[in-house]
Every structure is written in C-alpha cells, then in structure tokens.
Length: 317
Length: 249
Image (cartoon, rainbow over all chains, first blue to last red; front, side, top):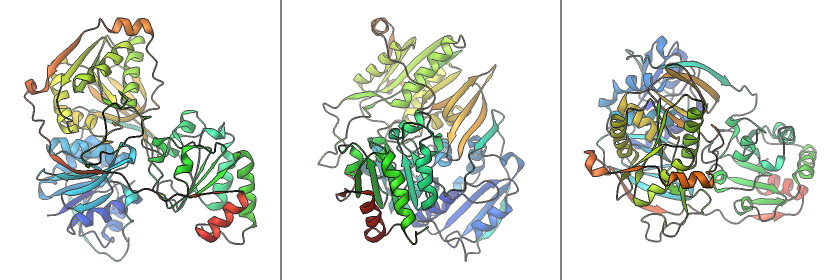
C-alpha cells in the first residue's frame, strides 16, 4: 500500500489544508507520496520535502499548470495512479472539484470528506450536514478519498528530507481556460485555520454594521465568518460563509452574533471548542450548541464586548 | 441549445433528521421531502437562459424511486419542457448516478448539463464532476454566475479564496451554487400546465449500467452531543468566563 496525496498550492506556498490532509493520509499508510503539479514551484517542492511525514515528492512542472484546472490536474494524476492504493486530497473547493473527476475515470466510488481514518478501507464521514456520522467501508481495489482538513491536525513542516523526483507533464485540455481569480486579500487570519472566529448573521441588518464584528475581530486577531443569510443579503462576500455549503471551521473560540443557528450553519461550526452565541432571541437554536449564551441586542452587546476586552491586561493572540 | 438539468429528491432542508436506532440509516418515513436546494438553482438558471432566447429546450431528469417524479414535476412547473425519470429501487452512489446520466446525455445530446453542486443528504459533491469525466467534457463547479457565449460559457466559481472565473467550451457540465440566482416559485397555472408535460420513465436496469454499491455503510450514528452550555447575564460575565474559565482569550 502507498498513498498519493495531491498538494494544493499557489506556486509559492503549500496551502495549509494540504498539511492537515497529510496527517490523515499518513494514518492510512506511512508510505506517503505527494504529487505537486505547478509551474515554477520549486519552493513548494522543497517545503513539501521537509514535511517529516512525506516520503517522496513527485514534482510536475509545466507552464500549463500555472493555474489549477481540474481537467489538467486529472490527466496528470492518472499518469501515476496505478502505483498507489489510495489517492487523496483535502475536501475544500480544490479537492471537491478535483477528486470525483479522477475517481470516475478510475471507476472508483469516492469517499468524500472523511473526518476519521478507522482502517485503510474504513472511514468516518458526516452526512446530512453533520447530523449523522456514517462509518463506511470502500470495497474498491483502489480508494479515492477527500479529507476534511479541520478534523486533522496540521503536519509538522520541518525536519524531513524527502526525495524530490521530477516527473513529466501530461496532456493539456483545450476546453477549459482560466480567466481570472479575485482573491480577497486580508491581513486577518484565514477563516479555515484561525484560532478565533467571529461570525455575523442577518441580525447585523446591513453590511455597514459588520464594522461592529470587524472591530472585535481586530481586537482578538480573529477571522470573520458569516451565515448564509448574511452573505445572500449582500452584507459580506461569499468566502466568509460558514456552513454546510460554505466553510467548515473548528476554532478554539467561535462567536456567533445575530445568527439564529439554522442546521446548515451549525454544520459548519458546531465542532468548535468553545462556542459563544449573542442573540436577542432567547429561543434561537444557536443557543443549543453554545457553551456561553448571551441573550442581548447585539448593537449594545458588541460595543460593550469590545470595551470589556480593552480592559483586559492581556489577550491571547 | 438544449439544457439537461439533473435534480434529486432529498429530505427537506428544514427537517431535523433522526438517526434510526439500529444504525442502518436515517428515518425517512413520513418526513417532508423536496428538491435538493442547489438543484432548484440549476433549474432556475436553465429557465433564465431559455427566457433570454439562448436555449430551445430544457429537460429535467432525476434518478430515484417512484416518488422522485415529484421533483421532475416541480421542475416542469417552473419551466422545464419535459422530464425523464430513471427508476431505481435503492439509493445509488454518485458514480452509478453519473453512469446513468451519461447514458441519458448520449441519448438526448444536450449542449449543457446543469445540476446542484452537492446533495444535502449524502453531502458527497461528486456527481457533476464524475459525469464530466465520463463524458470527457469540461466542468465548471460551484457556479455563482454563468454567461452564455457563442460556443462557450464564462463561469464564475465560488472557491475558498474568493471568486474564480473560467471559460469552458460547450458541451459542458455546470454545478450550481446557491448564490447563482433566486429560484422562483411555480404559479398555480404553471403547476396545472406541468401536469400535462410528458415525463418519460426508464428503468435503470434497462440502461446496462453497473450500479452495484462499492461502499458499505457499516453504521450510521448520531454525532456526539455537545454538553449543555450556560446563559450569561452580561457582557462582563461573558468576558470573565472566556478569560478565566474557558481560557480562550
């Protein structure tokens, strides 16, 4: 058995979720190889080779891989698939887009979004927005798996010295062209990996009022999340959405403000270590998952919260 | 241009699901069912493209048990022209569904196939990408904006970092995000009209496709419950608890 993990990166750095996926992959089998498909990404290859859990890095460099296109990645991965018992990657928009394409061409029934490795062929995965957990066993000879990154610790990034093997590029698709990417640049921690997340919902009533959230986020060095209702209402952009169809977050502290707590939102945050809910509706379902609930008008509570935080001598960052 | 839209019947998104005590699955008897939410967006987008004069026909297709027809009927009521119901007796894996849909695509020759980005029951997020692979068509997943061009689509995709735009040549598969559009409600006259629109029924077993499960569901269980929390009386108390009890700030 050996595992091939597909790295997500931007040709400069490995994306952090790949490090979480490496931890899960190494639990399937220790013979873990990482396939890096990119262009001018030698730094990424080097940093992957320094991850102690990685036994080998396959580096495919070609200008056709300047931008990630699932079709091009798929033909690249299929060139190496027959040598591995498992092909895995992170279950974020990168891996969700990619893995089914590979699985279908290998005639494998994919196991999506695993949260635990029980055995090399048996995994735990959430279904119904995390309201049930399924233990599933794959009977395919080879397995295609995506890994929920927030369910696994990030792998150590230093101390390893895996071999880097250059491998040839594969065919390029003519039918899909990358046009552009609007990346929202932010100095804040990333939502998916932040230690503290503060999220706003429809209770905020407007995009301008999100400033109340931002002010607290600045103080706590927190990432900013949102419910689907807040995103749909245009208060904030989509990459902040937490939930079944948005991002899944597992911070040490999750503060839900003006969020009622629909099943779909809870799916994205209820594994957080400590949950705070601030809502004026005492019956809101969010209180059922909150460790600390404050029944209050957020427009009064948030400025007070900031004031109280300012009084503290030290705040963990 | 012809658009095929795949829809799935799932437990309604508002239902708090219950896990069966024997660990064999979730309770579906007497539970409200409806169309998988992003599949509604897929139908809506197809109808909008047709209304803009860029599509000539919309076919709604579902793979499911007898009652799955309701989902097709609903699609017909909001603007699909005809329906196809592939009858199956058991729940199929996305790989099997995509093999069935491939057969339908080969029969109907659509220029575009739309469907929701993920079903909210099994949360697999696979079928569209698998169908694209089996057909060797380009895929545009998690679409929040679609612009129809001459022989291509420009699709804006919702990705972790923000938004990404790609151009795919047709024929192509698009999986739709919830923010693609605002699905309309069917009007009563249109619901009546939809009853007269044809739905072709096909038995999955007649399509010559291997639909045998590859994945065994060993156990379905409830997730661990969070222990009950407390209500705090003031912001001051909240901050003190976070600092001194939870020790997270």
